[in-house]
Image 1 (spheres, helix red, strand yellow):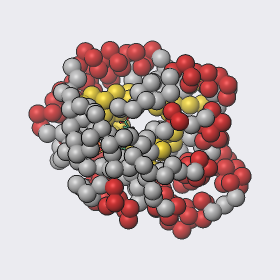
Image 2 (cartoon, helix red, strand yellow):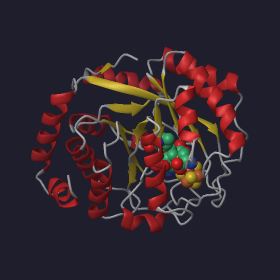
Image 3 (cartoon, protein in one colour):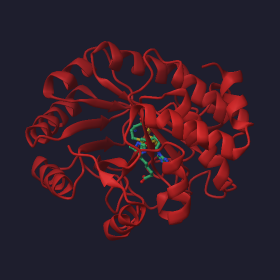
Image 4 (cartoon, rainbow, N blue to C red):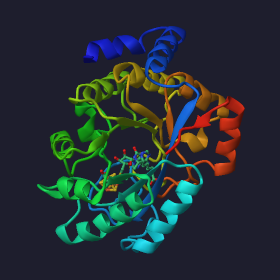
Length: 309
Ligand code: SAM
Ligand code: DTB
Ligand code: SF4
């Protein structure tokens, strides 16, 4: 689907757009099933990159400390707990530009151990160099998360320490190594509707398109350049979810960061528009996510079943 087609989806009456998204959704998924992924920041803070949205950049005074890599037993403990709570996928995040050679070995250990629990494994470690994606796959990694974040045109306004091309190159490496791709973006950063449509078109035109597409609503963190960004109209967020579903019919579209501030009704609308995955657990990487008890009540209220690991 090209940019013009995606933009045309955004311009549909909301009921028409959501109807089309729900129709496509039902062709490939059970509309009452939701996939749960749990995040853990295995290396927090001190990142050399300057992503304007991110609390973990050492260039922004956000109060997030530069911490060392977590020990294996802590990671394993968190993964076990996540599995017990119903998460089928465990995603390990590191605040790196990319893993240095000496960083990778302990992460491979974590991947092996989490895989050994019978969970799907995901990692998000930044840009990968030659051979690193293969090493991760051999260790048992199922998915690699690497977001395009926004349109190529808007990217330079948000990040200066790397390019859109760099992101695409890592995505290519991940794909060539035989890993599944988790790739999405952030909205609510002051981008235009055209930028949102261009992001969806970029994602849909990856060949093949990502298996998992996280749609994040910017979490505005004090001390980041985007702390005062204008919140995005909620219905524009719903349109973005619907456009992602229609453009990538078989992908897991994840209602990602930003759920903490969303009402139950707003989240319900996102599920109706084709979102079928969430991050589950009271923390994303450094910022809050809904309490598990609130989520469980929401799923109950909506008649949602959790998909089996
Ligand atoms: N450092 C690696 C990288 O940037 O690829 C991996 C970790 S990074 C924190 C993972 C993703 O989190 C980013 O690509 C971005 O999409 C998302 N993210 C970071 N800060 C966010 C925020 N304040 N609100 C929403 N999403 C955010
Ligand atoms: C994604 O798209 N969103 C997650 C995950 N992939 C790694 C991260 C959201 C981070 C929100 C800010 C924080 O908690 O630090
Ligand atoms: Fe670093 Fe990733 Fe945050 Fe950018 S998004 S500052 S690369 S942790």
